[in-house]
Structures are given as C-alpha cells and as structure tokens.
Length: 68
Image (cartoon, rainbow, N blue to C red; front, side, top):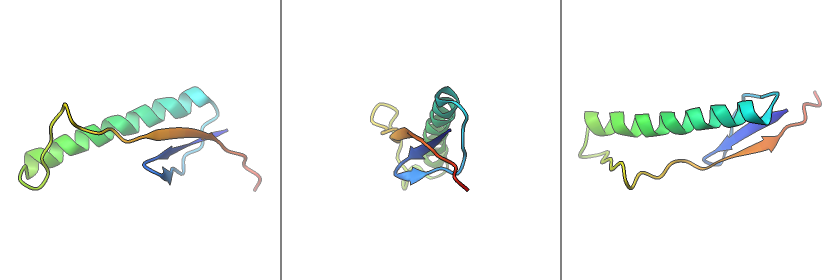
C-alpha cells in the first residue's frame, strides 16, 4: 500500500501499487500547472505565470501500513 506526499502534505488516497500512486502524483502535478495558468489568465497582475520558470510541486511516494 502506498500514499502520496505532495508539497509536504500527505494525501488521503491509498494505492495498491507504486505505479498507481506515481500516476496520481503526476496527475496532481499537472493540476498544479493548469491551476497556475488559469489564475494567471483571470488575474495576471496578482498571479504571474511563466511556463519556463514555473516550479512544479515536489512529491514523494511513501509506503503505508493500514493497521486499523
């Protein structure tokens, strides 16, 4: 069992395989980029977006032992 930690926050979702967790983590990274683009379009003065300097969030995949 695996969980994702992204931007220092552990996500609630639990995955059976490392690959499934990694796929979801990459999806979340894509959502972060898309969200930054949308914020910039709606209010570029407050949320500037530069594709070349955008810092994607870091993630790690951690083993999770469900002992409940």
